Image (cartoon, rainbow, N blue to C red; front, side, top):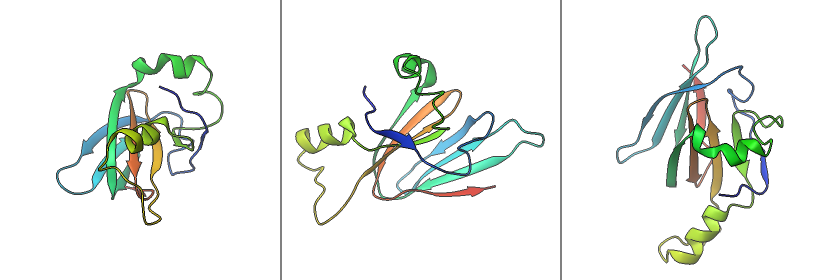
Length: 131
């Protein structure tokens, strides 16, 4: 898995000290992801993705090659954008139904936590709120 063109995506959680996944919910509607930090009192944040093409959830420990290359500690924070997405390229090439036409754009974003890395292909960046 390659993440060429990975850049910082400034969100409410980009610079919190620690971040854990609390819930992920998607049932015929938006993808709703709740994460939390370990501050006292703990804070909770919710990302609501609409127009989701696809998403994948990976346990953080399975991305050791990414972290070994220094990408985790390079100031990118917990949320990132992938500019040159090999995942989008592969879907456009191999899946006839996945066509980006009419000016549609797909964003490939990552929401990294201490336990899970969530990658999302979406038509628009999500709304993010503090709960």
